[in-house]
Length: 398
Image 1: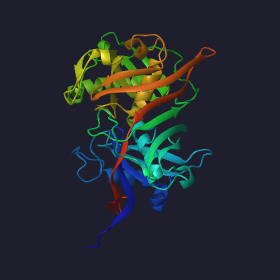
Image 2 (image 1 turned 135 degrees about the vertical axis):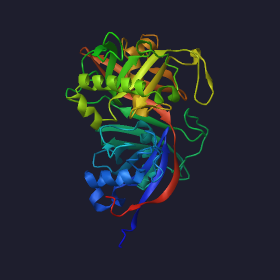
Image 3 (image 1 turned 45 degrees about the vertical axis):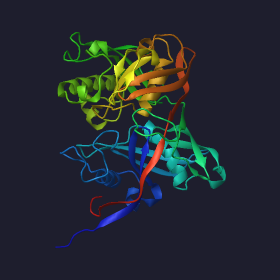
Image 4 (image 1 turned 30 degrees about the horizontal axis):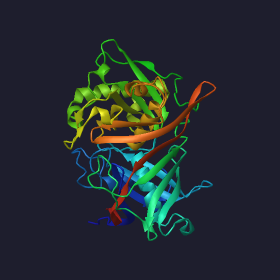
C-alpha cells in the first residue's frame, strides 16, 4: 500500500507578547497555499493539529489555547511606505476552521521581529546597533502598525530586562504603535452604533431584565465591554473560574452574539459560529486588590481598573494585544464603561489589571465634529524565536 510522504516547509516558531505561533514567509509556502483558500486553511489546520476532539494538539504545533493556536504569513509589502505585509490566521481548536477576520496584537510584535530575521526588511534600513523601525501592513484589517525593534550587532536583540506579565522570562522591549486603529467597518465609526453605551438585548440567563449595558467599540479589534458587576462577577476572576463553567461560557457567547449583531458584524446569530475571533467580549470593574494566576499580589493603587477578556470562547490568561488597544482607546473617551470603571475623566494612558498581572497602554483620542476618533495606540511587548527550521505535514493534508 502506497503512503503519502510528509513535506517540510520552512517555518519559525515564535513567541510574540503573550501568544505564540508558527510564522511563514509567503514565498516558502507550497504554491497552492500562497493564495487564500481551502488549501491554505487545510495546511494551517494540520500544522497546528486541528480539529482535535481531545483538545490537546498532541499531533501539531498548537498549544490547545487561543493564545497558542495561530499561524502568520509575512511577505515584502505590496503597500507604499511599508516594509512587510502581515496576515494572521486564528486556528480553531475543535473545529476545521481558520478565522481571518481580525489581527493578533501580540503576534504583531513577532511580525516586526520576524520581518528582520527573515530578510524581508531592506538591509540599508537596519542599524548595526539601535532601533529598527518596521512599518507593517496588517492585511487582515488594512491598518498600519509600527514596530520599534531593538537591534544589536545587526541582528534582532531578543534578550533583555523588559518584563511582561503573562510571560515567564524577561526579554528585549519592542514598542508597538497601532496607527488609526479603529475598524473602518461599513461606516468607518469608532463606535459602530454611534453610542458610547448601548443597551443590549440578551437572554434572561445572562441578566434577568434581559437588558445589559455595553460599550461597543472597533479599535484594535471589535470589542464588547460590559460591567463585571452586572453579570455577577468581581473582575478579579482567573481562567479556571470561568473556563470550567460551561454555563458561564454560554452566557458570554450570548453577550458576544448580541454585540456582534448590534455592531453589524453578523446578520444572524448563526453566523457567529463562523466568526469566532471577532468581536471580543470583555468585562470591566473598578480597581481592587487581587492575586494573579502566578500568586502575585496586585494592589488597587497600582492600577486604574480591572479587565478580563475572552478569546475564542475562553477567558484569556493575560490580555490580547488588540483588545488592549480597545481598552486604551475606550478608557481615553469619557463616558464609556471602560472609562467610567477607571474613574472617568480624560486620560491618555491607562494601566489595567488582568489575570496575569498589569499592562499599560496609551491612546490618543479626539472628538471631531461630534465624532470620536483615535489616531494612535501604543504599548510595549517582547518577542523571541523559540525554534526555527521546517514544519512537517503529510503531503495529502492540504
